[in-house]
Length: 192
Image (cartoon, rainbow, N blue to C red):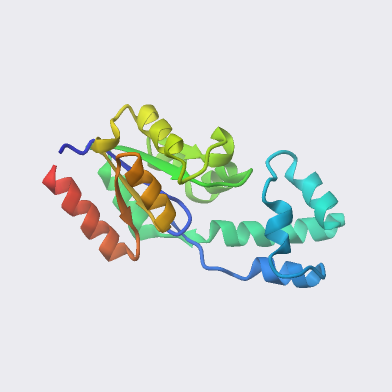
């Protein structure tokens, strides 16, 4: 086994994204039942602001406040230890990011964290219209990094995404904390 590439998730891995309770707060403000916000926003891809205004009945001020809350939770804070770990992997390994994402994520995350400078390639699900755990997103990531799945390690904090990567033939690690994630990554990298 020769590992040539390492891929990371963003939310919960490269970003620390605690649940700030944005959805319940806004469901309460808008007098919606629990879970209604996700149901109404599940399929939004185009013209997010207009769709939010139409689907949630937000005025301009509410829309601005809602989006500020959403992005604050979405972006979280940088996981500096894993970001630095990812940085030191180059140029020995091809590096990438595979993230289930929301319209605007690339621009917001680049401005906040400079992820495009961190890795060789980034795949945002909303841009390629395929989401984890669909094996096609992992195949696309490997193709763009010019590696085979069995030459790749992927780190994600969601079990379904790890399972999807494994199904695609990738060595996948469930990130539970930085020490565990780095130790498991190093074990795979030094064994290759």
